[in-house]
Amino acid sequence: MASDTIKNVAIVSNTSWYIYNFRKGLLQKLISAGYNVFAIAPKDKFVKEIETLGCVFIELKHIHNKGKNPFHDISLTLELRKIFKANHLDFCFFFTPKINIFGSLAAKFTGIKTVATINGLGFVFSEGQPGWLKFTVEKLYTIAFKNLKAIIFQNNDDKNYFLQNKIIDHRQEIIVVKGSGANLIEFNQKTFFNTGNRLVFLLSARLIKEKGLSEYFEAAKNLKQKYPDITCALLGLEADNPSSIPLQIVEKMHEQKIIDYRGGTDDMSSVLNTIDVMVLPSYYREGIPKILIEALAKGLPVITTNNIGCKETVDNGENGFLIEIKNASALEAAMEKMILMTAEDLARMGKLSRAKAELEFDEAYNHKAYISILNS
Image 1 (cartoon, one colour):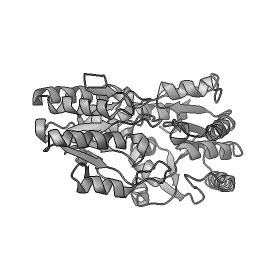
Image 2 (spheres, rainbow, N blue to C red):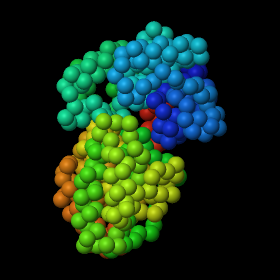
Image 3 (cartoon, rainbow, N blue to C red):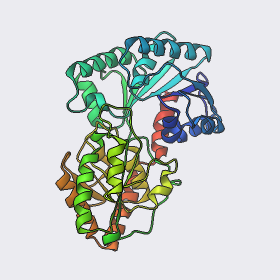
């Protein structure tokens, strides 16, 4: 039931794609609980789907996701403040870094209750980025998050980082959820696996180097020489990011039959029915990658890194393998272990992945945490 004092609730993000693909279940839960739900984001092709759910969509025009121009960010803050007041919003959930910061700043001038979700620290906090940039973003977080009603983290490493660096303090409500969860009905358990020389691997991610693409390419090249009938698939689109991998490189690997490049998809559940092992050799500052949670729900064995966020999804040797970051040889070895497994061993790993999803990553647990904040 909707709170007596809170009627109008907004979910705010840097893309409509994110709201629909990562927070559709939360939108539905809020609507069914009796709230008037607003989705605030730039327009893209998912607006119609969002509105079909029963939300009011409001276009966000002044966001430059990768820009560092302070005048753009001031314009974004003023636009958000205007939207909050014009639509008489009572409560906002913020997602993605710029929205977390500038949405929280905008809300300070309105009296709206707000909650920010840190779904990974991302590019700025990755290894090799300039110190001044991280320092600036930390200070912005500190100012924006002061007196925030609650902050939600997707892993304990990020929570501890914010506490240790005094970006937030223990007096605030701090909640840790395990990623954004997965719809365990939509992502139903896969039952059939190829084995041996016909195994199908998949890396699904934006085409940036921190997702481990170079290591995947190297491992795939070596393994295809030994096991020419395996498939090393890649799903993902070009990214507007300094670390972007040019599409020409990916297409060249595809032409050489090292990588089976599959572009993008709006139906990940169907894609996962066609593969046998999920691979994500990431050294990005992840929250908990949505694709790994969906792979668990599908009952797929997983190979990923012992990296913040990624490591949450694998019990090493049980439902998959954890490897060192930036280590193509370790990735190749783990993939070869999968190739040499029996169908029974792969199925056992898959069942353990599904069990882990049901125990830890059902999106219903995630929704419960968000609804409880509204009622607190």
